[in-house]
Amino acid sequence: MINKFLQFSFCKPERSRRLICKWMSYFDSAQYDTLCNNNFRKLLIIIIIIFSFLSTLNSQDHEKIIVKTGMDVLIETNFDSLAGKKIGLLTNFTGRTSKGTLSAEEFLKTKRCTLIKIFTPEHGFYTTVPAGEHVSDDNFDGIPVLSLYGSSRKPSREQLRQCDAIAVDLQDIGVRPYTYISSVYNLMSACSDEGIPVYILDRPNPLGGLVVDGNVVEKDKESFIGIAPLPYVHGCTIGELALMFNSEDWLPKDKNGNPKKCDLHIIKMQNWKRWMWWDDTGLEWFPTSPHIPTVDAARGAAMLGAWGELALFSIGIGTTLPFQYVGSPNFNTDEILKKLNDSMPGVQLMPTKYNPTYGMYNGKNCNGFLLKFTPDSLFKPYTDGIRLVLAIRSLYPSLFNKKNFSSQARAMFTKATGTDEIFDLLTEGKSDSEILNAAKKGLDDFIKIRAKYLLYK
Image (tube, rainbow, N blue to C red; front, side):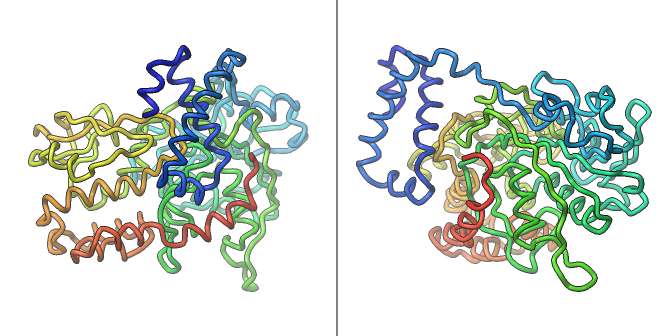
């Protein structure tokens, strides 16, 4: 209905869609569900479109807004909060100003503080090391680069020695198993032990600040890709997550059995709003890892990432669009679409064929879908990924026989989802509704906790 209406609009459809997302952001997740399931939503959307059209007449510079990252704000304040300090910087190729300059270079240029060490997470400083592979120490312009994804995933006392403060500038992708937030968690724990303050130079969540989706990691299911009781898609910035880690007593306990507390400081962004998708920020995307070269790959990872652990089908690894293809040589795309039978806000499945050059189905033609994403506040990638898998299960039940999966594949899927329940229900032939209900366990409680730490209203 929206797109048909926009065909008669005198303004740019893309601009109108983004304004619709902004207007919809004034409703919380419970209200979204209500709006999705009754005719009031249709009326509301028509009203929003009309107001959005009027807004474009008076807001021609809407798309020219550029978000100032925490690094930009630090520069504008002449590094006042770090003046005179010797700094360790957790960063990589994604840590940049809004003008595209590396944050490490900005620290080297300033005379207000002294950069003495760089820490880097999984994928290395240049974000080129494949997932799960050892990252070696390196150097950048004479500054030692110390890996937090090598022999240890937590900085040692010796590595933190001489640092008066640690700054963090990393571009997260908004998906809990992506290990950048785990490295921040471990860094905060280590700095708590040494009494070293941590300064988070905040950056946008590329999925926006409204999308919260998926079950929460269960107790005793924590891992490096499930470091804290978060859902798969958390809708937070790294700064907001750091506040949550610190104040919810989620950091490890100290030697006396008390939860650690980090001397934490957040340098907030300017101009970022929760309704914004990455496209609205005015910022350029830099690859966060080999298989997240674009922001659409981040969106696809939110939808398909966990399923790669079970190797049920290709998720586009080995193509030029990782996490944007999904398919198999044996799929009947028309039948899968029929099983889905309704739209997924924010994502469109476009039937296609593709041929991976490495990874699953290397050199074979796959029948599948290209995922196309458009801004939508109702986007629920984790849930939509499960809905897609359920449609596939209904057509190809033999794929889901428990005997098909190694213990390692099951263990990795449990780590990725944070629960055994989804795998068990899926392979034991339980109903779609049971699986979808399991896929949102703990979410309501998390949303209440999350509300206390949102820095951008």
